[in-house]
Image 1: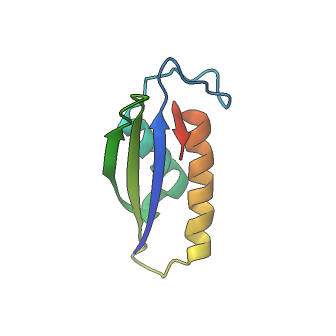
Image 2: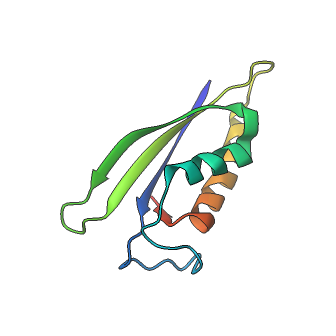
Image 3: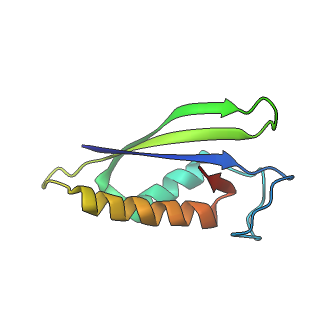
Length: 102
């Protein structure tokens, strides 16, 4: 398997989101992230699990980190292939979800 992490701040009403004005702030739902992951990588995704979550003590911003496990049952995956999927996924997360990538 190949493991990749993605971390982000969940935007709240005080945060600026210059990438997507249509996204509602403070309206993050994990199922939307899971849908995006499946939409980008399809059956190559074995699991998506949250591995870290914290709230910054001063700013009160919430951060989450998810680990994505990529695996193919019929062939070996290359790092280049998974890196390309991860790059596309990060771009879509930034533009389609109310988050700021870390």
